[in-house]
Length: 231
Image (cartoon, rainbow, N blue to C red; front, side, top):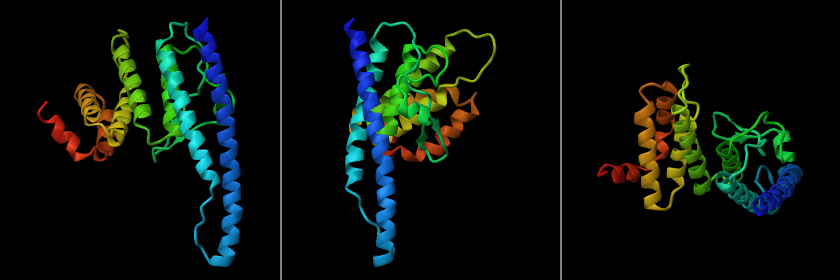
């Protein structure tokens, strides 16, 4: 129907934009290296600015918003689980997100094996949005909310085998990042309350949760804690 056609067109647009961004990034890095080498020989180590980076950044922000829209649609469209359009990225210790070439250049992707639920597909999209616009509150907030909802679903699954909830740390990291980027006091307050709820619920039984909070708590502005105290 119309929903399926809209998804197909948006995925196609994302694929085109992704190729443009990655090719421009590669070209800009090459051009900058050549220009910087020439500049070093003439002016010492004075840095140079490449105007092409502005174009890359602009398209990256547009791509982030396309992924965000696709993630929103994935949450609300009543379709059967499908293969995810995005392979799960990995985080390194510097909080940067890295993707494989398979992820960057093939949408829909077959890198993620098996069926993905609507929420998992949405999480993939929101995470991609955070990668293409690292300072966008909405992307981090929505990514964190996805993990919070998946954490609740995991708790309610009734598994007889005790396992650590795999979504709590990501939810905490996402909310902390969102709080740091929030310009709206109401948004920051609600995300801070969600963060505290996760911390109190899982911190005593999951050392990874406590470690995630300890490592990132400094990113939360002091005024956010002051707003939470009356609550």
